[in-house]
Amino acid sequence: MTIEQVQEEIVQEFSMFEDWMDKYSYLIELGNDLQDLDPKDKNDQNLIKGCQSRVWLVADIEDGKINFRGESDAVIVKGLVALLLRVVSGRTPKELLETDLHFIDDIGLKQHLSPTRSNGLLAMVKQIRLYAVAYSKIEG
Image (tube, rainbow, N blue to C red):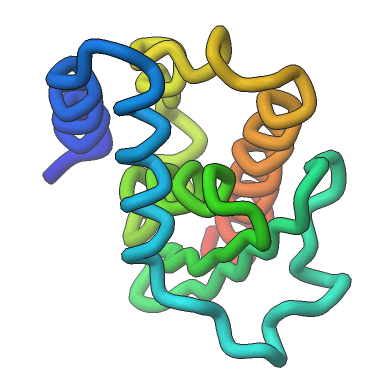
């Protein structure tokens, strides 16, 4: 699936829920399904700055594609991490740099998250783009 197709799939999934309590429950469910990081990866180097809760993001490149792993100590944020990773993991740096992650706005996350969570989500997206820039220079 392309990044666009995955984003559309997420928008469809969230459109099935009538209210935000159901959407939050779904986010928590997604976070619960996310594989925990190895404790050694939960270090300051992988910690996202700008998040109220603690979020770790790890990126490795293999065969020209960046594979992301992540985790958070907050249940809703862990769901946000799971959503982001579903869209961005396994993509080339070029794909990540050329894609607008519009699903965040399309499902209404920015409007329904607290300002600190919204800032944290933007910090995660920024870190993903920084990894893409770095790996594009290495691979390029």
